[in-house]
Length: 112
Length: 111
Image (cartoon, chains in turn green, orange):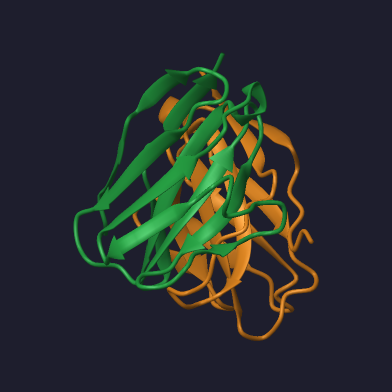
């Protein structure tokens, strides 16, 4: 298994600012992913965080709004930029090991 | 595009078996059936996966029909802690593939 931690666990941010979320895995993994979960909804994949190269974004998500870093095989960050109230969601990272994916506890973002 | 269909919600009495169905009629030969669940305010948790044979682990059993077009996740003795959203996902079996979540089934275990 893999243990994944995220920081911060929650934050309240002002409109127009940015929030950077950190994701730490307890051991090296090949693939890491970022998801968004809006209130009462399922998870939506934002992007795949590739180590040593740019992230691969899903349709509807762009690098300018959701820049991602993956400096090594255990760590990734997601920044949500130019925040608006519509960005209020839970953001989760996940890591793939073998045939399973493991998820962090999520970061609850509220934009005021 | 949704690869699976699940009922939006189900109830189950505590102590009884919970049987959660999933239809995946367009599954291809190299795709596995995965189940995850998400307990309120937590990240999703892997439960089980299978290709064509029935599988069992400490959490659940997975029954896949012979034509592989549907499957059932069985929680043999549901407890209140099993109340969660259960996601049935069809994906190739590698660690390089993203997991795409559908709406899932919200299971309520009732005392």
